[in-house]
Length: 72
Image (tube, rainbow, N blue to C red; front, side, top):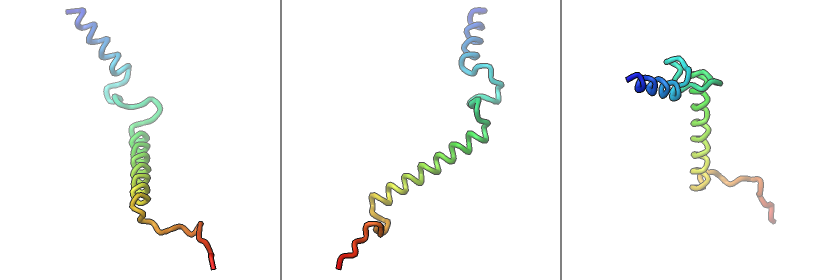
């Protein structure tokens, strides 16, 4: 029984480290709020890139005037 208790204690320390119970899932560099904002910014950027790819594939944007030829 003592061996089982030791195995459980070592497994618990290995899985959660020395963190307090409320810190599970946190990174050492960022707080929960900072990490949540960072993830939200990344999701926002990825969504805008996806919409840009869809607009490009469906040709929803007007032609650019950067290559406008003034042929007479």
